[in-house]
Image (tube, rainbow, N blue to C red; front, top):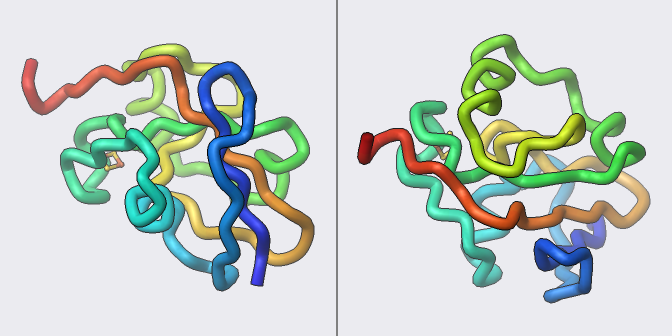
Length: 110
Ligand code: FES
């Protein structure tokens, strides 16, 4: 099991949970009350599952696809270490921190 820490946009801790490595981060976040809409349910059409990672945790995940990178360009509050939670699994090992962005852009309602 890996400890996953969900952080508020200001970096303060919301909650810490344990998850099986490989668990989809969007599913885990939604089960634990995090404000990620995930409007397109993982089909990479919305970016409402945007999350922000620390540099070290970002490097623990497999590289993102070009499609994910392109979609992130349209999300709000994007950083160099942003990902789409629906495309990420919980990594093995050390605790993993996931920060909520300050807001989101829902492309499906445009
Ligand atoms: Fe829509 Fe992740 S849930 S892109």
